[in-house]
Length: 279
Image 1 (spheres, helix red, strand yellow):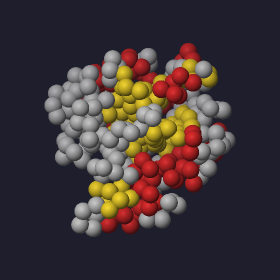
Image 2 (tube, rainbow, N blue to C red):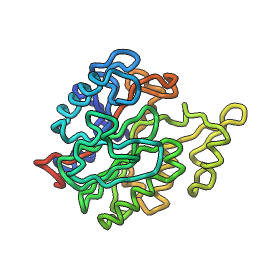
Image 3 (cartoon, rainbow, N blue to C red):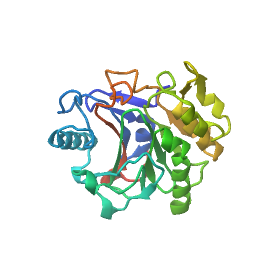
């Protein structure tokens, strides 16, 4: 069953089960329509780093924040470097990266917070968006996991940081895997496979043979396997079935579009008036 519910009005995919259960929570993933950018960034491009007109990108960001019921001041993002650094976000960093690249939280492919009124954002055009929610503390987080972040175990780093900061128990943690390039479209070479082999138990389940000694890699499944190895319950992990490379109508794709394309966003945050309340 698809975990992300499509909303044509807001041009987002809502993490429906979480939003229904927790009053005041916004969590989901954007689609490519409903914005202001021109081709090849048409039209809800949310990345300032891809060559699009920055005025259009800021308009798109403002539109999304409004649709989600957040002031634009809440928009908070990190400098994504395909690494494994995870940063805690406080109210003093609220709005980081909202208008300019150089104001983003430095070197942060993972962000987490327990404070309401902070809308965490990260950007994608095939990489795996991973969402975290600790129902006990109300802490929420996002991890950006391309192949480098995945083999670097950024999902596990996030779990460790939540445990250290809030006493999060793996068997209570909720996790969701958003739309990403899937094994049907993600062919990798031996250089990548050298890092994949042995990264987690059952890693073979994430790999299928490709053409001429290459491999088809299921990055979402690899992240799921790492998290379950660390004690996250399989029934607490929700997954999207959308492939960003297959669905030209819904998503940007770096691989499909030859690198010149826009960016979707994952988002999660508590609205001020409804923070950390189970529905």
